[in-house]
Length: 156
Image (cartoon, rainbow, N blue to C red; front, side, top):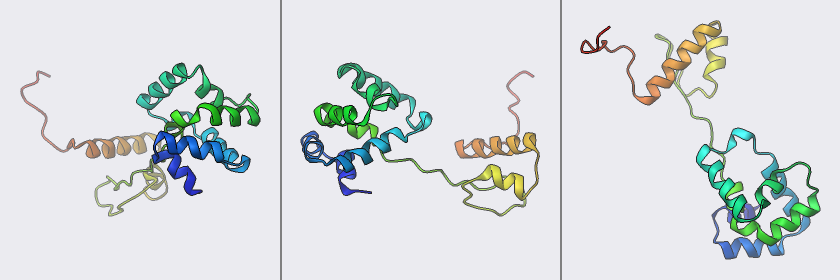
């Protein structure tokens, strides 16, 4: 990845403005492809809210940049004109998958990226059992112990 992209993410607004103003077409095409490659679930709810407010502040520029119907030369012009104020929000660093340990008793597999596949391929669990063990793994990550005694103060 080009070092200028990292400076667009972490740099000051004046530095971002300078990079976008001096950028050649190939670099801007790379930036636009990165923006367009972000999946819908890539941004968290708070980030989506922030992008919507930025879009309103700049007259719909963010929405037009993310649109597939706008030609490249228009997106390039939009980035050069107003991109320095919001480009760092669109190019945020990717969040990587978290490694999980297998929750099945007796299994010593640690640091799995694809726990779902491990439960299917190694333990040969059907969908309902896989979902059960995935929920156990999520609860363990949250710090909730499923083996604990039920609370006797709650009427059943």
